[in-house]
Image (cartoon, rainbow, N blue to C red):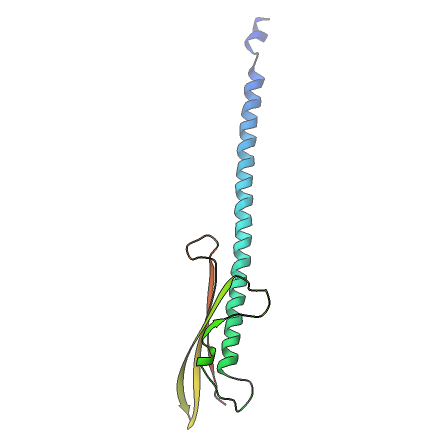
Length: 142
């Protein structure tokens, strides 16, 4: 009878230990879940920023080197802020710049355009800031 009296309360200590361990594992799983969610959001926003910058590049190229033959090329027309139609890039700021240089090859003059598009979302320095910049070089050569 004396041995049973000395062992009273041991199962309470073991139960508290198990609860503490399970609580720590639960807190760790919540932290991992939150990190995974932010990683997924970051990947999606980064992809959207890339596509927004790509849209700016395509707009800049279409302005600098027109599709219709005989229309003048203009680098100035493809410089500035770009706002695409629709809601796909809401919240994104897209800036397109263009630099041109005149070239001559085999006596034929043409222009080379360096077009840069930068798309950004959010405020720089915050955790929700995403930015992508793309650059392409195109020509009006025949």
